[in-house]
Image (cartoon, rainbow, N blue to C red):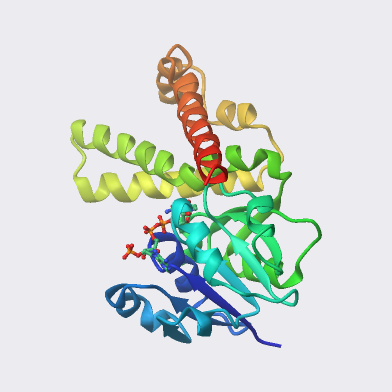
Length: 259
Ligand SMILES: NC(=O)c1ccc[n+]([C@@H]2O[C@H](COP(=O)([O-])OP(=O)(O)OC[C@H]3O[C@@H](n4cnc5c(N)ncnc54)[C@H](OP(=O)(O)O)[C@@H]3O)[C@@H](O)[C@H]2O)c1
């Protein structure tokens, strides 16, 4: 049976969800935004689009994909029934905050932009499994269920994380170009190396240390490069980036809950 999903706010994240669900046979999608130009950009990926929130409010799953500070205003315009599901993806906006403003079943999801390629990593918190939301997230990529207390960490890890990874892909590309490789080859090899390495980590029964060891032949090239990383602060600094994003999510949460 087909379910309907409306996405309120078709910016970066909302449009990624709509694009990812665009090829689904299980879901029909409704894109809602206040800006006509935004609607025009997303139209081809949606079953239908609207600038009328009442029409967008009829879906089985209503996803709020506006900036955290706009969430209270959008919630005040919605009147959903207990048969419906409200998915909130806004950084720092708690389930409790949303639940006190709707009759719908509330699920909090921290998605990421890879949803547009059906490769999304999502963290979910809910009171009980919501099978329609599970099916939607399966369509968009992979998800894990977490305790909501850890949602700020997930916001940093898989919400902000793609930017950290883009940065690392580009650092490898740039230095390969410095070393003489042409930009097209450097970019292609850097990207595929990240994809292949991530797939190896997913498939392997070995630990990350064992995987590193398998690339590091004695007196070889990898061990020379790894020695630079092992004696650097890169690991701590990547950790500090994750913590800075986690702290900002906590701050946003405090700001939104004081509205
Ligand atoms: N971007 C990410 O990678 C990412 C990852 C995880 C979670 N999120 C969460 O996703 C949410 C959206 O982020 P984003 O990056 O997609 O922001 P965004 O690009 O600014 O998109 C928000 C969209 O909502 C529209 N909008 C503003 N007020 C509205 C209203 N009252 N009703 C309907 N639409 C309205 C905006 O239109 P105008 O531009 O015309 O104002 C814009 O098209 C945020 O809460 C964020 O925390 C984002």
